[in-house]
Structure formats: C-alpha cells, structure tokens
Length: 107
Image (cartoon, rainbow, N blue to C red; front, side, top):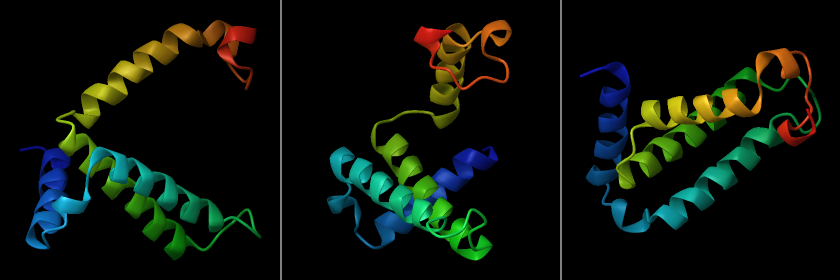
C-alpha cells in the first residue's frame, strides 16, 4: 500500500468510526470542500502571509474532504490529477503559456 492509499484508508476509517458516512453524500462533500477552501482563503484575508498553523489546518481540511469525495466516487486521486494534467498540457502548451496567466482560449 502506498502512502496515498494508506492516508485515504485512515481518513475513511476516521469517518466510519464516527458513523459520519451517512452525512457524506458527494454533494455534501463538495459543499464541504468549498466551505473549507473559503476558510483557507480567510487565512489570507488581511495579510498575504497568513498564519502557518491556520493555513496547515485549513489545507488539511480541504484535502481530507477531497480524499473522502474521491473515495466515495471510487476515483483514484493520482489518476484523476494525471488526467487533468494531460488535458491542461494540451490547453496550455509551454511555448505559448510560459510565464503568462492568460486563459487557454486567448493564448
């Protein structure tokens, strides 16, 4: 078992031990990701530095919900990130996008 699989198993076990799976529909997990991402953004509300401890905790919350959603939908996080990177590489070829923040349809 690799580190990511082990981590996902720990996150799922934590949830199962508390009988929280009943609250974790894909919709609710997606909402929770957005809520936690907002809390992560709040760490930077008044300073571009943020407090490292708060950032770490909020980022962990976002990642936990992402892993739970991937598990719920039977998706492999590594596979879906690699697929998305391949799609993005097509949309944003290095020679056109290096050092630019322009959207792909305007390159």
